Image 1 (tube, helix red, strand yellow):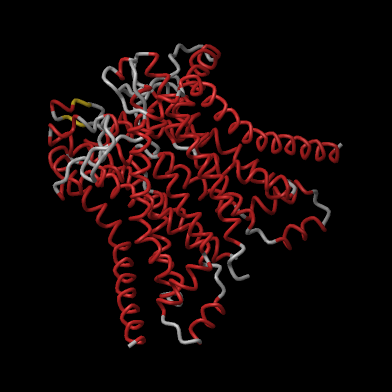
Image 2: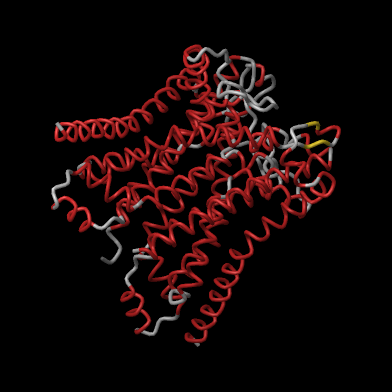
Length: 285
Length: 297
């Protein structure tokens, strides 16, 4: 009897576990299906090739080009800015100060902390520095805010790979007379190139999809930004604003914008996989 | 000459690395200081106790009681975690102990993609699926009347968003359980499930708790997806089918108006400060748990 109960318990939990795992796959399928189903009918060529025309927000003609370009500008700028800080930082943790365990652990803790801070807090913080610096809501302010927000994501992803670089590789480079800069930027960076690509794409995806950080800082406009000081529309904000409209045509465009955003995210995900596989061949095992 | 160039490059890059290092130590302090500085005005006039525990919200009259927002936030967050916890735990055990290699290889990208989907997409999905589901199906089932824009919808959307986040941490934690311990348990005649229950789960209990704590702090700050489905009506929610108005949603919804009234601006920065403090506390706690765990090993 007890044995039967034991077997029953095991079977029961096995079914539950397999079920909840299958549920995850189903969930993703369900989310993507509903976004495609709702977005596809309103996704015309006009949507991706034109900026909003007069009366766009009452359901007349125009498209989302301003938001698409704005999002790409914003995310690329933020990733570039963040890379100039996160790469040296990751190298500092794994080459320059590799032996100072306490310092490195301290940095890891701070990164964990920064990683946990919600993007809305970064948005509020970005807003305060924006006012402090005396700039208005603009592409530049958005880039600065998003770059701070994706910084911990990038460093952690790079650190994850650089941690595994064997000490012997560093030692052999040093023994050949390399300076620390050469070891860091020529040996370790090259060895971890797939990891850096992954980190960049991951951060890009985060940056392009976030609303809360840019809500205060980039503003919104119907034009494609021509300078860093221009206000900028972003895709997630376009989804958010248009979904709040009472007019069905405008709501449908929100679904189209959501579909475009999802496609970009999925493309980034696929690219990450392909690129990291391709570059893996070049690193020393 | 060549060596001189190399040396100079080395010096410059070292200076940059050190500067960046300093920057990262300063960043949390700067964030904290700027939010504190901004919210100082409202703290001075209303006092922290009044801000946190009063439920009178009249920004135009200068009365800022955050209690309704804090309660909404806690309600949504805890509900989300309760819904997501069993799913995450069960899937994590399945993927670490039962799933074949092919199975894991199939599921990993799915988890990654779920983690990468922007919160606004989860929001759209919530508006299209979860809101009608709670409004037309769940609310009548429990004898409530609801439009669907409710605390429960927020909790459900949060639960889904938390899955990849918590699951990844849990899988990592289960992987640190030594094989020898599991094998020792199996060799004593325990079944696989018994070994998991009594060895793996018990051993990683602190880790599981800290994973949930991290999930909780992440959920607490989630803004846009929750904002889209909770209804955003000021008031203390009485049931999961009531509308709510969490703190992040409050900040996001009022960003336009706050500039005209300095005190309102200050109050919203105080809300951001509260979010920051909650996250810092939960992070420190889970850090402590993990250090405690490592010492015990």
